Each structure stands twice: as C-alpha cells, then as structure tokens.
Figure 1 (cartoon, rainbow, N blue to C red):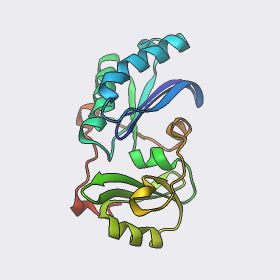
Figure 2: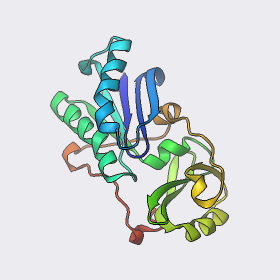
Figure 3: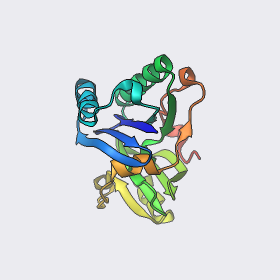
Length: 196
C-alpha cells in the first residue's frame, strides 16, 4: 500500500511517501506562510524521485489541526480533491499527534497567538485532552500532566524536544474519513478548553 502523508497546518511543510510503513522519501521543512507556494513543487519532486504517480497512491493521511486557519486548508484541500476524484482513501491525525508521535506521555504546545496556546496531552499516540489556554494556564496544565514536551516550549520558557514528523505520521493511529466532503478543519476557540 502506498500512502501519501501531508501536513501544512502550522510552521512546517511535511510530505512523505510510504510503502506500507516504510518511508520511501519525505521532506520536513520550515515553510511558515509559504506552504501553498511550495507544496506542489515538493510533492511533484517526491513523486519523481520515487518513480511514482498520483494514480499509484492508495491512501492519503493529513493533519486536520489545530493550527493556522489557512495552513490547515492547504493540505486538506489537496487531499479532498485527490481522494474524491481518484477514489483514494482519506485518513486524518491531529497536528498534536504529529508532534508527539507514540510517546507514552506527551504534552504539545503550539502558539495560538494573543498570549494563548493550543495545548494537548497524549498517551501512546492518542490525544486525551485538547484545548486553548492562556500562557499562565499552560503552566498549570503542564504541572498536572507530566510528560515529554513538544512544540513551542519557548512560550512557557521550557525546552521542547524535537519531533520526528516523518516517523510519527505513519505510526500514530489515524482515523478513516468516510465522508470526504464533510471533513472540516479542527479549529479551536477558548471555549474549547480541555475538550477530549
């Protein structure tokens, strides 16, 4: 099975082509606010380098947020068009799963601007809590949820561990999207704090 994984939800552009669970070729580059300019160039290069075509792809896995309003939609739009037009399977993981991977106990913080952050706690690749918190609330959240920190630790003056996006993409449990047209980005508001 050939899988195409795509993430453009936040600061990075992550693209990977996998045969079963083996990475054939992938990129993970910082492309904040440049994902739309870069994604097709990089995607076509990956296909050329692996001697594959869009028709060879069996399924597409994307992130559905949280993250940048525009960023999430870039990979999602491409995936929805590709899967609906070429009858491919579509799967999703959250941006937080992409950062944490299969860590047994992990916290992810991503900058939500205005002195707030998207925050999640995950265990073994499964998101158990997700919300938007102020930076002061994030400190309390981290005290109550021990685990490895990923993402924007600098927001709370902590060092975050680097994420292996290309490894995490294929390892974390993804959910199948049966109705491709009904898929919408996962945007969070402050009222969504501690949503499971």
